[in-house]
Image 1 (tube, helix red, strand yellow):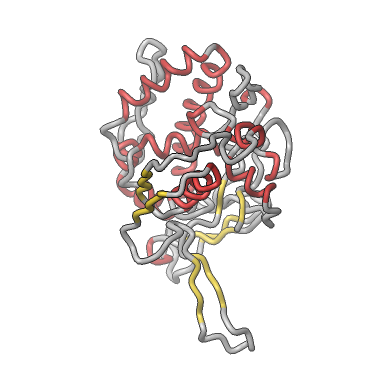
Image 2 (cartoon, helix red, strand yellow):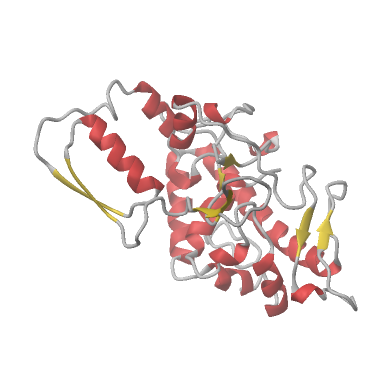
Length: 299
């Protein structure tokens, strides 16, 4: 398993926890809660013990469902039923084996699902086991090996981006557009336009979110309610195509759209975010994507 490269967000955006059980910003999405602290201070399981015969149903056999069942079992609950719609457990943890190898190895493995998970590091710590998430708790508890997973276009790895069947811009032969680790900007004008629009949109949101987080829990709640009211009917694709607006503090939580054209949106669809292309999010609620990039944004 690989974890996201630890973020090193600019100090002007990094805000310590404001309450006893709060998390630093950036932290676990909009939840504003230090789950790692909860797990560390428990005595048995989640700090709950029972000898009762409660029936518990867990819908979904992904990592979250399996973890919930595991922790409840440790608390003493025995009558736990886990329902999974597919023929396998693990959700986005989907490891495949290829037996057609010719190099003497019995199997070659590759991941068909998620490979990158945010540890939600607090302060300036670079150790995934010290993050504020439940994931970090288990990394520490079971000494799980992790490694960095650089973002496309970062200083840590060259990234090949394949789009338009390889005929990007005015090429006569198909090829990958390589974002070299020595370059701070994307390799083609088309990618640069997409990058600039996305960067401007997320900068606008992050500035408001970080400032609001520092004010009070009430201000944070009002902002999140505004975001929900503004976007709960929008898919991620809607927001990508919606026009850009100037943020109005009187219209809390409405950041408008990214302002991409259809062609730019199609290109953005193919660009990876470290654990898959942004296109895999296009038909999801924008609220999910908002929570994800606010938590993982690196500056």
